[in-house]
Structure formats: structure tokens, C-alpha cells
Image 1 (cartoon, one colour):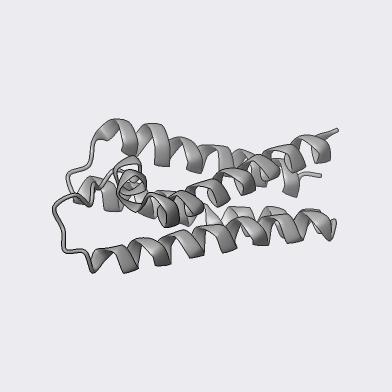
Image 2 (cartoon, rainbow, N blue to C red):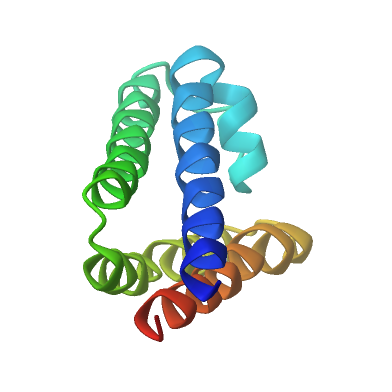
Length: 125
């Protein structure tokens, strides 16, 4: 049962990060605003960095899917635990750049919390 819950949470994390990554490729300025640091008044060259973020997000989601398909429950748990540094660092980045607290906690903090719970469930399986 806990493996099913862990895999369900991991699948949701993978789908969400792939969606977010795709949004950075398709609508980079909208995605940047959702991230908490709008890119409205920056040079167009910043678009390259937003695209890089999008590709890396998509790859991160695919790593989760690969580990799920391989049935590597504990490795998946360790991967998600290690990857929790991403939303924690995102929260710090958004806060340092004057982003809204609602995004710092409500988006990045909540993501980190869900990832920690998912890792704990998978590692406890």
C-alpha cells in the first residue's frame, strides 16, 4: 500500500515538473511569474536561461518516471530526497529576489514538503 502511495505521489511530482518545464519553453514569461521572479523587464537574452530551466525540469521529471518504470523504489526515494534541494533553493532564490512570500511558501515550500513526504514513503517501503 505505501509503495502505491509513494509511486502515486512520485508520478504526480514527475507530471508537475514536466508540465512546469514545458511551460518555461512555451510561455517563459508566464512561467517565470509563476516561479516568483517575473521576467517582464529583463533583456530578451534571459529567454535562453528560461529555456534551460524548462529543459532541466523536463529531464528531472523523466528521471522520476524512469526510476518508477524500473521499479527502483528505494533509489526513487533517494533521488526525490536529493532533488528536494531544488524547491528549497528555488524558495531562497525567489525570496532573495523580492518574490512574494505566498510563492516562496505556497509553491516552493509546499513542493519541498510533498517531496519529503514522498521520499519518506518510498524509503519506508
